[in-house]
Image 1 (cartoon, rainbow, N blue to C red):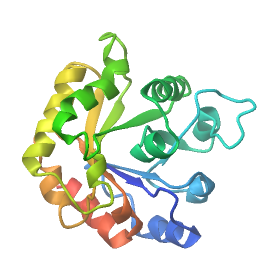
Image 2: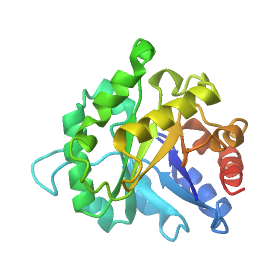
Image 3: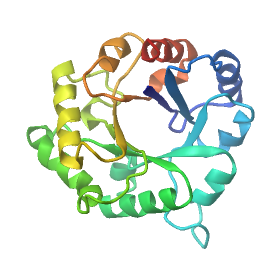
Image 4: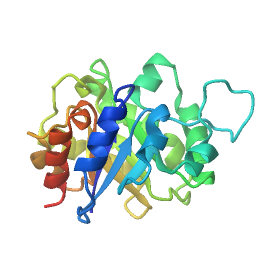
Amino acid sequence: MKFVIANWKMNGDFELVNQMMSEIGKGRECCKVIVCPPAALITSFKGFEHDLGAQNSFYEEKGAFTGENSPKLLKDIGCKYVILGHSERRAIFQESDELIFKKWNAAIRFGLTPIICIGETLEERSRWKEVLSAQLANYCADKSLDLQGTIFAYEPVWSIGTGKVPSMQEIEDAIGFIKDVIGAERNYYVVYGGSVNGSNSAEILNIHGLDGVLVGSASLKVSDFKTIIGNASV
């Protein structure tokens, strides 16, 4: 079963919520649809037939952390998943691998399945294996660590929102490398994100070893998103 994960980022409104609710019906047992809207819109999805996720959460349950999202509260309002370590969080908010790992631990503790984003910038492309290895190090230091279904999203930063998509072979090579680093027998999944849309999703979803896609701007267009879901359900 493939994952189709929508990351709305800081976009969307009640109209889009209603459109998504009415047009993305259940009937897709062949893939797992997860929608991650801005935090302010999560509770507007009441009765949604698919799973919800948040775009970030903190590493503490509660306290004097103005502006942060409690993993416990996210779980309480219906989230099953949470995106952590997106390249925008790493670049704009200077989140380190160590901080992201602390957030991973808290998400697991409160019953959320983390979606950990990893990927290299254009400047780092020549040493992408080194970059990915460093971003994965905390999850691999102890091979007995139960990853509890964690989803690792390979998102080459140079491809996000640019329309530039790596070749299918480059994506397959990266997915294979990630699985080699983490280990084949552990409990996790690997998806791809970076300019995924209705036109290229069928080919991407057919890549050997890939467990699904993380979709950005195309998830804001319901017709495109429906096409991607259809391609994942084949």
